[in-house]
Image (tube, rainbow, N blue to C red):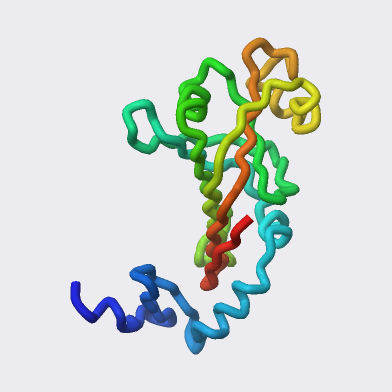
Length: 182
């Protein structure tokens, strides 16, 4: 793959521009400078509002075998996101042992709208997990919907709270993309 990777490609109304070996899509007539301006204006608060309709994230951790393993996790609409995301689990689950061994965690969110139905939204959060065993913290993040998986509420034996603290957030909103450091 030679110098053609440094050139823009046209795909219908979109132009794909490769910067640092990563493609960036710009809309018809859009420029990198216009996109950088839009990206610079997106804040964590903006992303939090957009995440309000996304119930599930894919949580990825490092498996015991050393590879990456992922699973869907409900954020229970606890999305007043300021860099921390919270998820409940059972302490006996494999993900808890994985986090205890290596706290590096990533979360992937995808909005429900696709290219044809509206503005697509994708968010990737990279950070570190902390395991919380304090019932006061459980109560602060508990919603009634969790009773389906934890029938005794915050008193369910073996329940644990996973706090993922973001260090970096990548996002794609329609034709724009950006990155925030938390």
